[in-house]
Length: 285
Image (tube, rainbow, N blue to C red; front, side, top):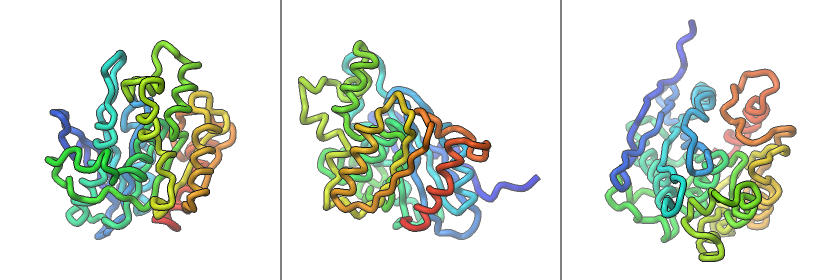
């Protein structure tokens, strides 16, 4: 049996926010490094999901020389007054800071960091990548071990992501008006606070001053949960207008939430994405 060419460290703590310990699983390639790192953020509409989403991607990328840190973060709960925003963005931001601050001892290249999220995780990843250094999130948790470290990344990867919260709120109203999960995240409706929906949307930060981050936008054209036209496609358009290095990866016939499928499964959507993602990472990370 071939020995894996990477080391897996489970439950590596990166911060403690409001009494909650935040952890992740670290996939480290064998060798002296330093290795580029991807922080992985699972989806689940900010309310559920787990880091098992990346159980196939962690080994796949580590075996190709890319370290991975797949994290957990605080989730919203059903009902009123359960909002986790902006704290949940600070959770993900702290993971990037922890990895950059620990880069030397972990054999990582602190200049070659990426962040990857799927669905709601793509929303959080994009917020950190494009707005992490804004006053809304910076210095939110000064007790973090690496609170003063930059959370900037070279590459953002978003898979069937949510980038415009007002558009997704409208979509969710059609799907389940009695339990709008965007409203659950933010704690208010857009009729109560439209500015919050703007501030919490990655598309709002697709601006010239942020275009040093390269972006790989992945979506399936049969997604019935997140409307790719008002999300991924509009986000990609905004990125290109602001002169980002942005590339789409359209997975034909793909619905929502398939990133956890085995990569080597014949005809799998993950298998379609894998070589294209590796090519992008070689170019941009």
